[in-house]
Length: 191
Image 1 (cartoon, one colour):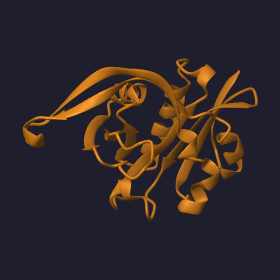
Image 2: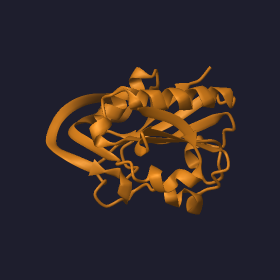
Image 3: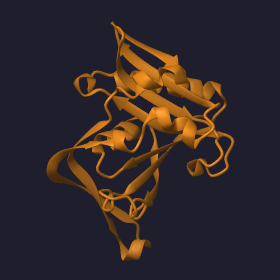
């Protein structure tokens, strides 16, 4: 029986048990038109299949070392007692630059589903619960970051009604192994 519920920081060890693997078989290549003044063209191209493990960049057990998480919400999905999905929505937080000082915005900080439970609607259920609570908390905007090589996430956010609002072709230049990735920032209006 799959159970989805809001949790708290006491569940961080279980949260970190949920894999953060991204299956990459294609990515969006971004090409500027007229040096960017004419816009951008996105082309999905096939790449050598690989798995990117995002857990080396993100561990729930480290959230409090980086941020005040007092207005963050955490959600998990369990198959009986086995953690199979997790999500974090961050409210306005000092040093969380993505919000840009807004008090009416939140960030979808993390959403992950264990490999064998992907494509079963669990991510959608987690997202729906978080979205409902974000609206109830009075947020007007959800900000979501992903990369050009996470095509499934891009499709998911588009399906939710989010709009690709920012593109940073150099956001990861200083991160070894990620230098060629493009940062996509999506905005989802919650009104």
